[in-house]
Amino acid sequence: MFEDKTLTCKDCGNEFVFTAGEQEFYAQKGFQNEPQRCKACRDAKKNAAKAPREMFETTCARCGGVAKVPFKPSSDKPVLCSECFAASKK
Image (cartoon, rainbow, N blue to C red; front, side, top):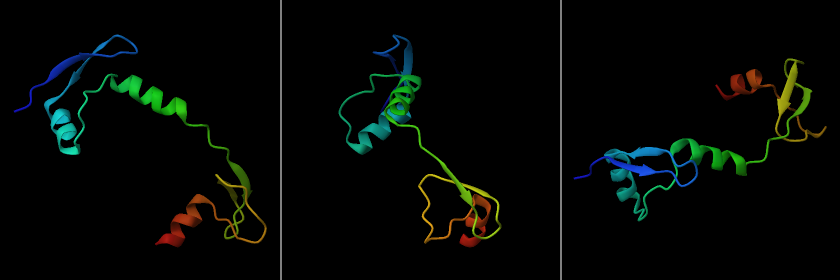
């Protein structure tokens, strides 16, 4: 039913393939328009909109190691490093 189509990216001007599988996915989701950007330009546009995440360093409440977290830690709640947090989820 669907066949691969070659489209031209509106940002970089390179050609890219809009595969039959992608077309089927678009149809299932109810999307009416074909993509106008290649994958690289879509990813670049998506990442440009994101602000870099500020990380804060603190001491892990369980092992005493360095914990880097994406929020400003407060003294009233314990903060765990990645390894201790993963272990607490098991």
